[in-house]
Amino acid sequence: MSMQTKRRVVAGKIESAEGTPETLTNTETGLISIDPKYTPDIKMLPRGVILATFSKYPDLAGQQLAHIALKCEVIGRGTAYSAINLPVLSPYLRACGLAETVDVSAGVEKVTYKRASSGIPSMTLGLYTDGVIKTISGARGTLKFTGDTGGALYAEMDFIGSYIAPTDGSMLTPTYSSLAPPQLLNVGFAIGAYSPTLKSFTVDLGNKLNQRDDMNSPSGIKSFMLTDGDTRGSFDPEATLVSVYDYYGKWKGGITGALAIGAFGPAQYNKVKITAPKLVTTKVNEATRNGTDTMAVDFQLAMSTGDDEFVLEFS
Image (tube, rainbow, N blue to C red; front, top):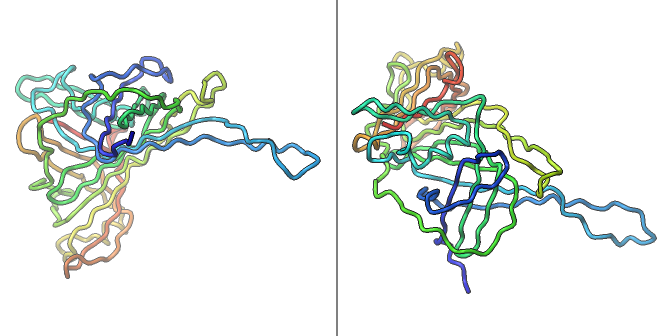
């Protein structure tokens, strides 16, 4: 039988015990992802023994890990948020190092995500590929947001976890949201009081992941820990007069400004907002777009009081 590329289902669940695989069911599906990818990585160990020949004994299969990479539309829920009605991205964002806060104030319910420096949960993830189930456990991920004018906001995640041997099995049956994603139109992108004319932006949490070696684990790896982060990004504004906005002066002087993107979206409970208390310019290059001078601006998002350099809000 042939296996169809377009028949893929992603499932993910926060683990009760770190590194202990959870059972995935239809309940853990529903994530809308673009071309999810599974990449195993099994460390091969040469024996290195001295023999009476140049021939070799077979390498040994050592520690085993795997990646599941996802690019997902950032979509709201469409109905009032609560502890049991969260964005579909909720467990994935948490396992990428964002702490979740749910505000159930009547009529203005919202869910907010900020950097977490502790208490970051691990996940079990499964990629169901038309008859084969590919799973990792003890997983945590990197996280980058990308946006282009008129399109959706995307969350790009690369989860790394302990390898579990793929097995044949039936596809799960997901229920997908019928909502369209909020589009990057009329988003109110601003740095302080200045609103540039721009086409695209990125924000990368810069997560650093390190494996926990464990010879008691079948794969030799218990889980992956998120041990550091450095939130940076870029955007591409049209060039302007220094008197309007001095990109070079902000860069040279280390002058910060608050970042605001949104809230944008078609309706309540499907609106998204990104804010940061301090954006500091780290590099400015000249570029062009459609015959117009532009800037390629790199930035860092820095903390105000701690764990607050990046805030994602669903409202």
